[in-house]
Length: 298
Image (cartoon, rainbow, N blue to C red):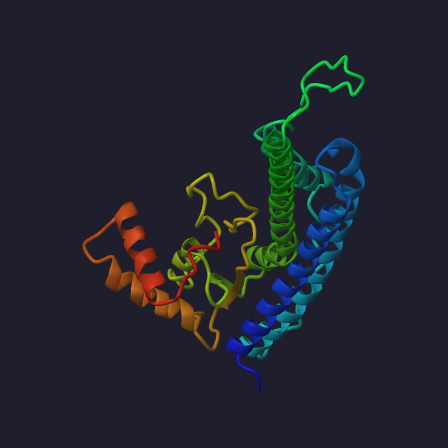
């Protein structure tokens, strides 16, 4: 019989695979279609394709989540009836439009504004009535290298903006599953709490939340840092791969994941006598030293 840990792992991989496929499409189509010198004229089609891909990914994430929750519920509560849920509504198109615009075209425009214009040498008249003397070979070489560097900077800005938009799409697709988990959590009376399930090497922020174990309830994040906004009880950044496991009342286990227990032990050991930012920084340093967290991910 499959274990809860195996169910969690399979579901986690499915959700991140679905989100990664959409993020890859968003980035690939951005790199293929967007012209840094004509942002407004080349992004409209990309935005429409990206929004459609996100909605499609969310539907797949929802379907995967329903199967996972039903299997988990049967495993923890064998006598419980099958789980039946209507598909939750997707995010308003205006939200996706704003998210993609800010991370894509607007980010690119801001980056391009910081790049100097290409050098323009005064015109040269070969008939001898020149407006300027003929540029020397050194001057021509400097001009060529300056133009090449500016082109490289534009391409780097384009790639960075595309990656940011793809990361935003990744998060929006993941909410197809997260919103479903949250809906069951708030409406199924057999659910007690939930625990955050991270990737194998999450960022320090996500690992810290996972280290708390199965303590999250309906109002857990009501007073959390406003920078980490998200629907329901989720506080996720772009590119976040976290999923959630529901803890069922009278279930067969206490809801802890192996990584969460390890992170909890590390938190207790690394933060003794510390509080606030000092405790967080000590935990992050210890997690990095032990290879539990990848602090470059976010």
